[in-house]
Length: 213
Length: 213
Length: 213
Image 1 (cartoon, each protein chain N blue to C red):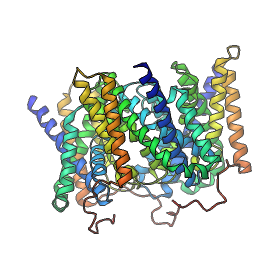
Image 2: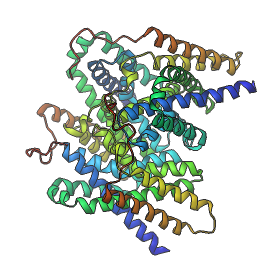
Image 3: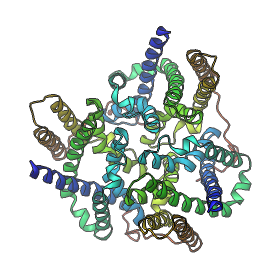
Image 4: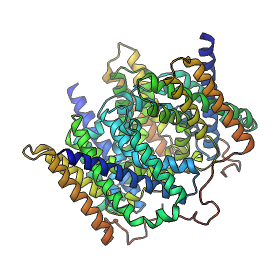
């Protein structure tokens, strides 16, 4: 299963890259300066994991100690700054890798919480947080309501992935690796289907005129 | 004093419920989807306590490990989604329980910080944070200036409750339970009076035209 | 070098004061009530350090335990509330002390992370966080895109200061105090020059019309 972990590692960097690209493009669209673009790329890529690590007591957070994440985020920011039209045309592959990042972060986030000895609820909640936390901070910094709270089946896919990881953890006779593969596949498939068919969660009372503050 | 702790426990869940209702209704008014409504209900109910626990080293935070809080928050979200007109009519009882939640969270937040061996300043600051932190995160996520910074005697009531807890802690001959009851009563009464008489803190320079950014 | 540390301590309180003034004036301009002004003054002064301490495991955060910071922040808030025209006229000295605060917080933040045994990347990232974190939280609470992401050479100066501290840490034959003085001077000079000559970082694509969301 050594190759599997190498694969996971490669996918995690690819997911980090996709998250960083999504941050950098959003920052560029808002006319932030180059520091702002780099900062938001890094925060989207590592923010969720940093919150998870602070909550499970993994000090210092991996996002701050592993230079690979920082370098990947800065490369994504540099590409977005210098080849913006190209990055915009890469929209579809970026969404693809973003779905990979979402799935991997949800799965590895939940696994890390379990690994630190915390219970299933902590693992599920922090699995989602790892997956969507960076994007939420991005939207807070760019001064808008986080898109995952408004539409798209995004956090729900992460939730289901994290629940599968935790369920598998309590069923001893399945190996952790197989559980991770199933959780990843389900989360990733759900996200891709949601993108393709424009699935959204229901918005209660959407047909009424209660949208005023 | 066993009954007192049962009572506190019941009141804490009631306060959690009220906080979650306030989050869910605000989220619904902003047309968030059902995931967004559940997420904001949970964050308002548990966010302040999570920040407190991270700051005092209570890892993992109680809001992430105790399923009762999550379940209460999700019930509040489900009620808000399905019975919104009813929940809106429940405005007055919700404000009542919200005041209970505010008082209890301020008192138990300050007590927990003291219990972990931190000093009075930490206890007061984290008592307020426990009480108002969730509401501040709600307003940040909904992209508005936190209401507690703009008006209403809300955080001030929590501050006074937390100060009473800390003062009582340094006066040995009063039992912790009595201190808690006094702190709770003062905080709750102040908040209810502020609601009833529309007390606000002064806004400096409000009569001048310096409100432009 | 005892006097140097007394000097650092005085400068740190001066920087805290300048940060708190910047928070209080921004809060007052937004018509927050007196609690909101005090809260934002405190958060700007101590927020960055609190995030740093949580990330390096310095529990409880110094910003919550040392009453000096709280008192300095409340004095700054009180001055801003009562002598607002005076504080506005103090704009230049406040910018001067803000630059001192920026430099000191970047340097001491990086040093504290190294002192807790973390690596250079953690020290650089948390040095910047200490220096600019409070200002970012201020802007989030006041519901606007953090100014440091949009313009001004501010975080960049902190970044360079933190990098000098970390570089000096790996060069054994230079004393920590000398490294700190050099890092401080470079960061401070860069910030003052940027203020004087209105240096900004480039904003990619600024001449195009892609600023719409």
